[in-house]
Length: 147
Image (cartoon, rainbow, N blue to C red):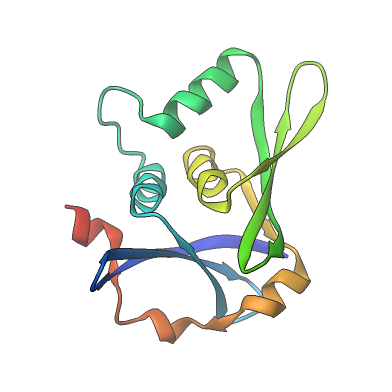
């Protein structure tokens, strides 16, 4: 299923901030919520906004190295759910061949946000984790909290 980043939200909890990236698909008003770290949430938002803070952060560095070696991110696929943890595949085109790298969804989405690479969700994964988008309306956008 073709997907897109619907939003990156945060909530204050007794133990600190909790972040969630919401993936939407064209065929549904529901979203796939993936809970991630606050640093990854901030990185996804920076990628979406094309914010350059000077020195490269980890996702910027990874992308710079990949591009210097002639590679490019083709797409990200949220491909599975393993014991309540989402799994993603990072599809990379290189001068030699295509490669698929196992990666956390948060890291993959941070890279996709920087490159406008396609995002996909396996249909069974979406069906297993989908929730109503309005369940997350009360959460703050990460940009508002981290500003």
